[in-house]
Length: 112
Length: 115
Image (cartoon, rainbow over all chains, first blue to last red; front, side):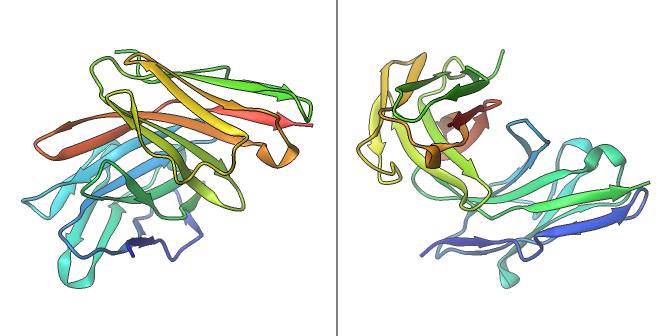
């Protein structure tokens, strides 16, 4: 069955530090991959997406993610974190249907 | 575009009462999704529609839950009767499939508290 794993439930970083959030998926075919961010009290906002082509994808707010087929991973990165990046981050896999399978999320805390 | 619009943003009701959540998808989108988010279970897909037709309702918890999409610009999720365990944030999302690719856009959610 298809699944998405975000192994880190909670990550804490200092402002200005680099960030990498991990995402692994289990899916038989080439997946469509997404990262969403959810700020407190808000809905999910799309950060970036991968459908095909260049495996390094740029998104909004200075985020990027790299698709690695050999590792079944789609990790999210940012070179320098800002306090406003504190939020919950969800990785998702798009199936051949219209459905998305979401990971359980990683809560990011940023210290000044 | 105003994005996906959900109402109300907050709903507090008593056990046994009927609750109706509303969603207006992005204009031109042809798929609509209802999700429920709780601390214990995370984000769960309840049901989704394509061209106003329910495609997959396997996530609907039980018969107390029902969803309708009478037209392309409006959907409702109804809980009757409501129970305290229904307390959660309910999200609506919409999407448009093009070239096999489908991106979901989420509303701000309705926070439901059943007392």
